[in-house]
Amino acid sequence: MQKIAIIGAGLAGALLSDRLTDAGLDVTLFEKSRGTGGRLASARLGEFSADLGAPAIDAQGQVFRSWLALQQQKGILDAWQPRTVGFNGEVRESDWKWIGKGRNSSLTRALIGSAKLETEKRIGVVWPDREGVMLRDDEGGVLGHFDAVICTAPAPQSVRLLEAVPRFAHIAEESITDPSWVYLASLERLPGKLEGVDVVESGHLRIARISVESNKPGREGCVIKVEMDRDWSEANIDLSKEQVQERIRCLLERWLQEQLSVITERTHRWLYNCSYQPVQEYLSLWDVDTRIGACGDWIGPAGLEGSFLSAQDLADQLLKS
Ligand SMILES: Cc1cc2nc3c(=O)[nH]c(=O)nc-3n(C[C@H](O)[C@H](O)[C@H](O)COP(=O)(O)OP(=O)(O)OC[C@H]3O[C@@H](n4cnc5c(N)ncnc54)[C@H](O)[C@@H]3O)c2cc1C
Image (cartoon, rainbow, N blue to C red; front, side, top):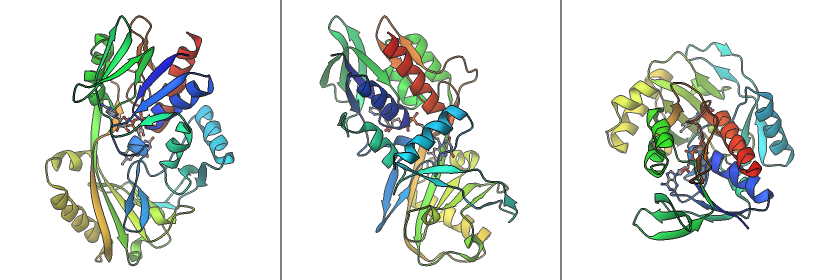
């Protein structure tokens, strides 16, 4: 049976694993973090859980929309139509979106199913030799040889991993990546301006979006999430979590015109929130000679839908070959 290694257990890696496992291939996922989800990860916040990455999944195209509806039928996702307003209070149009049951990372968990998953395993080297494609962890330990290795890490982290195929490393290098600071707080009560609202976006020069996480179907507590915009995040990228937490809370309280009743709070720095290609030429990358490939949101269209399309495209190519 063909042995395939996938680097990264975000949406692209999990979906690819699902497709290849279904086709009877022997798949092992290597993930540097403790859990799955990547930029769709969830985290504990006191006694509740909250989505640290993308708050919800939306679809522009019919293929992704149908696939999401299928995951909803299987009981993995819930549908959500957030009541959305601008920062000036104007009601905005909002489409149906999807969220993971209980937490967004339940989607990647379900897709990975019973495939082999090695967490807290950061890959350092991907190199083809006579026995196949060799993987080493970041301490130099050999993890084995595989018939093919697919990298789904964000673009800046993929550059080094794709060194054996210089044109792929170059595409990763050319991708533009934005950072984002995210603030999560569990509150005693919801501030007045957020009552009856699920999402606030557009019209603030620093804050990109506020989501009332606990308003999502099946979620508990009184939890909010604030995503800062690219320019603010970049300008504050080297500050400590504590300093950033203080600054975000101040900005938020100024807009809310009241103090937050914080029980627990945490801040997370996403160095690679969103990626874009200067020119979109491919959906995924596959080199038949070295048997090294890549998929993810930095190759074709951006965001979750881009990751989905990229992973589907690569799965089709691999299964054909
Ligand atoms: C706060 C936030 C809000 C967002 N909002 C939206 C939104 O509204 N709409 C939208 O479409 N998109 C949004 N996105 C972007 C979206 O989440 C990503 O485009 C998508 O999740 C990327 O999935 P992926 O599988 O391609 O990459 P990732 O989810 O990044 O998965 C890659 C995985 O590889 C792992 N990895 C990296 N290096 C190594 C290594 N050396 N060894 C082993 N593992 C490694 C990482 O830990 C990660 O788990 C948002 C992202 C963030 C952070």
